Length: 33
Image (cartoon, rainbow, N blue to C red; front, side, top):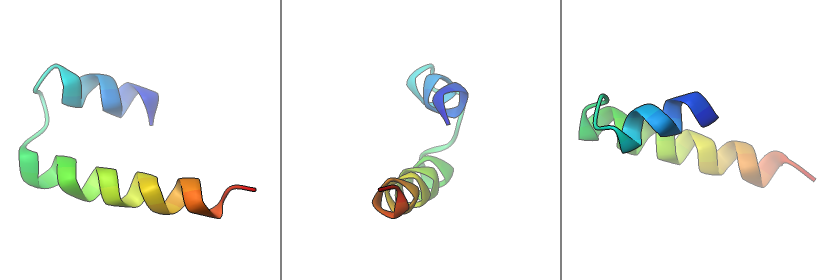
């Protein structure tokens, strides 16, 4: 996830995909204890 976040910061990932990744990352964080 860190590598993907860096690519988003560099603007390599389209906004639509970025939004999906942010949603999936939030879900993963909620599942962690």
